Image (cartoon, rainbow, N blue to C red):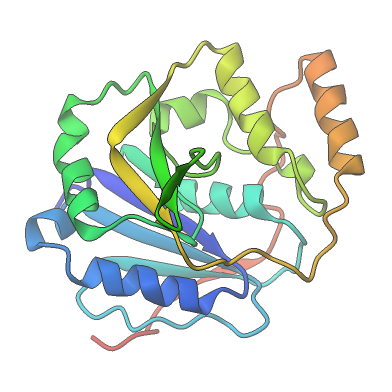
Length: 232
């Protein structure tokens, strides 16, 4: 069946956050599951991620080249492997309750593919700023900016800011969906890698001043799809 929506997330040493997502997806109604595909990139975690997918439409990919802060690369892998026109990117520690996922799926036909959609976010019972890496976007918009810039990979920061900068250059409107709220409860932040932002801070300045687009060289790593990784 034709899939309307791809759920796309990447993981590094965050198996408990994935387990929470899977538990949530298991209770989605069949009409919602029929419209979605779920793609997860395990970005060279120390212990390879495993999932008991059951009836869920999950595909799991393992990146085997160890590149620190490879978020842009993982997103490019996911977007090129997905088939759906709508792409829902989210950090794995941002969780959308099942009833909200159903609401979003049923609303897709009423959304404008020329916009990028952001979501409310709740933490410890209160609203906080929407997450820059959790958004819904039509494939045509991502393709128009050439995907995600892997020149930022290997160092921390700004690859997400640069993606939104390129959208702003193209006058893509960002729309906040007030009735759909992600919950951030499990902290899956990476704590064992350097967060020095100086190199990428200079890179985004250089790219912005020079009017450069997204890096042409993409998916700069070895990867494979994990075939039989869960119980049928």
